[in-house]
Structures are given as C-alpha cells and as structure tokens.
Amino acid sequence: MSLPNYAYFQGKIVPYDQAKVGVLNHTFNYGTGVFGGIRAYWNDRDGQLYLFRPQDHFRRFLDSARLLDMSLPQTPAQLTDVVVELLRREGRREDTYVRPLAYVPDETVGVRLHDLHADITIVSIPFGRYIESEEGSHVTFSSWRRIDDNCIPARGKVIGAYVNSAFIKTDAVRAGYDEALVLNQDGHVSEGSAENFFMVRGGVLVTPPVTENILEGITRRTVIQLAQEELGMTVVERPIDRTEVYLAEEAFFCGTGVQIVAITQVDHRPIADGKMGSFVSRLRDLYFRIVRGMEPKYQNWNTAVYPKPGRD
Ligand SMILES: Cc1ncc(COP(=O)(O)O)c(C=O)c1O
Image 1 (tube, rainbow, N blue to C red):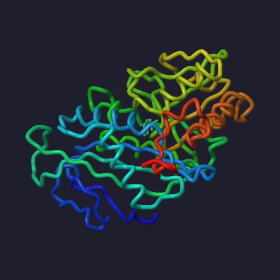
Image 2: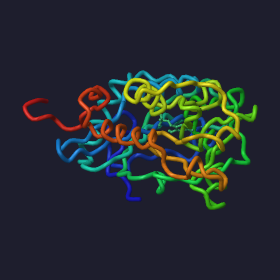
Image 3: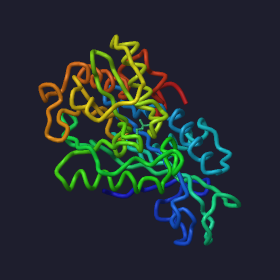
Image 4: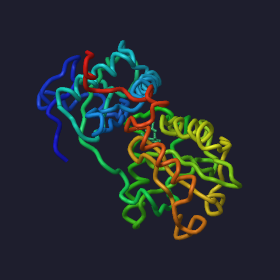
C-alpha cells in the first residue's frame, strides 16, 4: 500500500510525514479513539470523484466519539469540507477510501476517559475490493463472540474494540474462509468482522436489529431503504439464529469496505444453490450505480469532490 501525500492533522492539511504522534499518546496505549471509513468513487463519465454519504458517516463518527466522552467542536459539514479539500490536494482520480480518526493526543499514563483532549486526523488511500470474491464468498461462524454493549459498545467504531474483529477475521482467513459471521453473547448472529449481515428467508429480507451488538452501518441503512423503496422487499429487523443462515435463500454482507458481498457458502454448506441470488444481484447493480453517481434520484447521497464546470 502506498502512503498518502497529505493528512489532516491538528486542524490543518500537512504533508503526511509531518502527521506524527508521540508513542505515549493515550489512544496508542489504550485504544481510546474512534474511527470511520468513507468511500469515494471515481466516475469517468463525469470526470468526478463522489464521496458516498459523508455527512452520515461523520454523524456516526461524532456519535462514536461522544460514547468515549470526546469533545469535538467540528460538524459533519465542516468535516466533509476537510475531506473534499484533502482529496483535491491528493488529486485523487480513482476509487478511494477515507479514514477519519478521533484520538487522544495527550501523552500520559492512566486508563480513563475523563480529563483528556481529543483531536481528529484524516487520510485517504486508493482502494479497490476488500473481499476478493464479492460475487460468492465462503464464510464460517467464528468461535469468537461479539463484544457486548456492556463491555465496549459495538455501535461505536471504537479503536480498541477492533481487536475483536481482528481475531474474527484472522482465524477465518487462516482457516481458508473469506470472512466470518460472529454470534453475540445470546448466540444470535450479530455481523461480520467489519460488515453488517442480511439474509433472505421466506422471501423477506432479514437483518439483526441494532440491539444485537452491531455497528449501525450506513450501508445497512442504505440497503434497507433501497430494498423497500426500489426492490419491493419487506425488511424485518429481528434476532437471527445460526441455523437460519444455513436455510436462507440468499445471504450477504454489506459495509463501506466490503460494499455488497454475496455469501454463497457457510461452513461448507451452500446457501440455496450456492450461487449469488437474484435479490443480491439486483441490489449490487443498483448500489454500484448509486455510489458512482449514476442514479439522479439518489444524487443527494453523492458529494462531488471537484468543482463542477461553471461553479465553485
Ligand atoms: C463492525 C462493522 N460492522 C459494520 C460495518 C459497516 O458499516 P458502514 O456501512 O457504515 O461502513 C463496519 C464498517 O465500517 C464495521 O466495522
């Protein structure tokens, strides 16, 4: 991976190699920070880079920071402006991933959330697929359990909590799978290591509710809206048992990183006929048109990075 040229750091865009923190900083030592992940899609026809739902991502990012008692004055609109400026400075003309991170710069020893400062850094990198087999992934049920809301809230993207995701992902990949589904303490399906989960059962789209220790995904919200408004699907948010997944007609992961990934096998059991189903296929087509700015109805979800001709 090549490093970015610039970073937003201490309130300014600076050369990436000037964005440095001391090794004693609190987040490095205790995981007391939060992060986000936003994709920007290059549209060749428009000669434009479109950020997908950046303000919604920053709303969740600031909510995650609030969970950690971080006080940050920036608004989602201001942070989106920073990202636009950063991407212009980088001159990105390809699919890109933007990584905002709120951290505690204080170089101090002592585990706590109070009496600390908070700051934001943002970088961007070129980004393609997160899971190679997007059209048909093989997934296992992790032997790890999802962190509970009363341990570290999964609804916030808390840096330290991603050790849970790292265990889940690494064990799955080392065992030859693409990803893993993880159960919560009640034995219900929560999500993947870094993606939300949906299945089709009895012709209905089902996903775990936000009380099942999931991240409240922006893509999840997008999928629910598109399924109901564009694809004529009933969506139900309810707990999901492990063996329901074995019997599902279709299953998929969604998230900014993975985008929409069909799950076609779980623990060597094919989902239905073991091929990507028609709902996931239609959803993927629509999703990729929308994120790339090809669907006028949903253009309010696309923030253009470069000045439009005759404007700005
Ligand atoms: C644990 C987890 N669940 C779900 C998601 C998907 O969330 P979003 O669609 O907001 O990217 C992510 C990705 O960021 C994640 O880390």
